[in-house]
Image 1 (cartoon, rainbow, N blue to C red):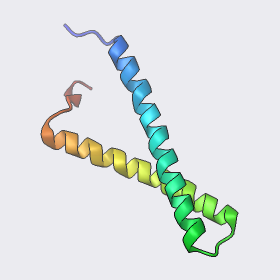
Image 2: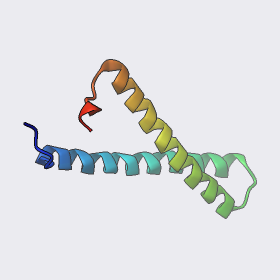
Image 3: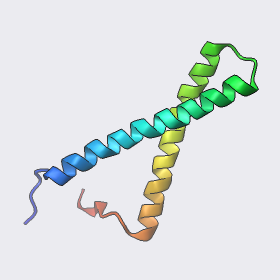
Image 4: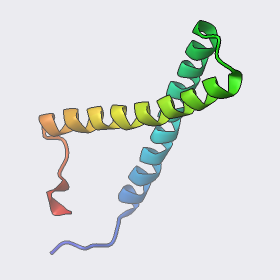
Length: 81
């Protein structure tokens, strides 16, 4: 008999997962902003907007990559959902 109530580890895991998403966004966004500012003659606002888009897309792609690697290794057990 399994309980549907989240445990403390589930809550901590969710919080850490969201923090990792924010950190990935910041790192990818800042790196792309530096790259756009240094290599293009675009306006600062356009470079910032492109950096935000790159940060969001890059974060999604990195998370999908990690999830795919975990599924290949059999590290996840999401069959309960």
